[in-house]
Amino acid sequence: MEGKQLKKLMVGMALTATLATAVTPGFGSIGGNQEKAYAATVTYKVTASKLNVRSGAGTNYGIIGSVVKDQTLSVVSKSGSWYKINYNGRTGYVSSDYVQSSGTTAPPAESTTYTVTASTLNVRSGAGTNYASIGSVTKGQKLSVMSKSGSWYKINYNGRTGYVSSDYVQASAPTTSPAESTTYTVTASTLNVRSGAGTNYASIGSVTKGQKLSVVSKSGSWYKINYNGRTGYVSSDYVQASATASPKLVVDSFKTLGNAQQVILVTADNYDTKSAKIQTFEKVDGKWKQVLTANGVLGQKGFALAKKEGDMESPTGKYTIGTAFGRYANPGTKLPYRKITSNDVWVDDSKSSLYNTWQQKPANGRWTSAENMDIPAYDYGFVINYNESRTPGKGSAIFFHVGTNYTAGCTATSKEQVVSILKWLNPEKNPVIIQSPVSELDKY
Image (cartoon, rainbow, N blue to C red; front, side):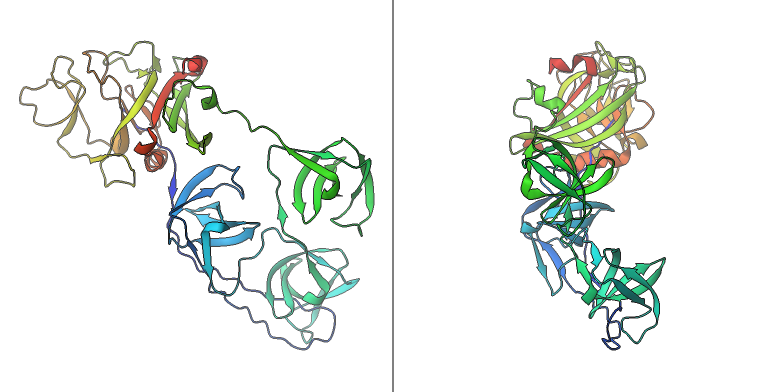
């Protein structure tokens, strides 16, 4: 009896976005502006009833959780129409179409580069020409800007803090990564490859019509590419992007899923291994998306060809999801949830009329054997609806639960993953769990 867990992150993060803009003095006699980093008291709130949090800035990226209406978000930056946020200790992205900001300063654009435009620009110790020069930067040099103060940029300069005049620094458009599975083809007969994102940069070579390009990112109207082992830039006006088919998921070929829109897939290399791979999938807008991948364990003797009571093997097959359980309060699952007490047992006595059911002590002659439910392995989990007909000797108490070594016939993974999967499971989506050696997945 064991449990497994997928991870859908429910986030509740409050944020006040603080953007300090401090600038670095350089050329000119601009006078002694004192650095004045202004705090932007901007609040970002979700306006949709439920908003997906994705692993990247686009709907082609996987869902790592969700946020709900009126939840406040910890926004790091903005990339196109997506906000980069702190989400349960990791980085996530949400569509800005469903987030409302209140305040005066928007988050910084993500991946913005700053380039020196003056032939030589002084780097000063403070935000003003009255501060001493601590060095200089030259035309075309890229700067690591920390913030802006008045007309000065605060920068990292050789491991220390410096300031340059914003009059002689140009911010380029945010750099965005192209969609992963996209092919880029040259449409011009000959297209210059330049050393920077603009026609003012030197040509370092050329590409020809029909040539495929390895695009790294896009900056304004220029593609950054890998060109003969070095970095180059080509105009996007002469490059055509054609989306390619997304990689096919294993569940795309399954024929037995019926109306299931959530699938937990537990696979092993063969029948005899106790190590398993756990994957979760969800159908969104008619297409299957992978949600989670985790390591898990099976029964001590692996998968069963024909499950029997006490054989230390996990059953193969496709099963519906039953009651969620745990020794603590409901962690946030939508499944029916039952909190375990010290009297709870699962009857494994094949001769009992209560075989393969959840009962409470004392036995009072109703069974001679039952498994105690109040144990650490069942801190959290759910029932796999196996042997619902309660055929004597066919196996009982098959769970998805907490564990990292092996089980007595259940499926298990870490507590973190179990809780994550519990939060993700939605009975309205008719979830199922499929357990099988990889070689027999064509049965499903």
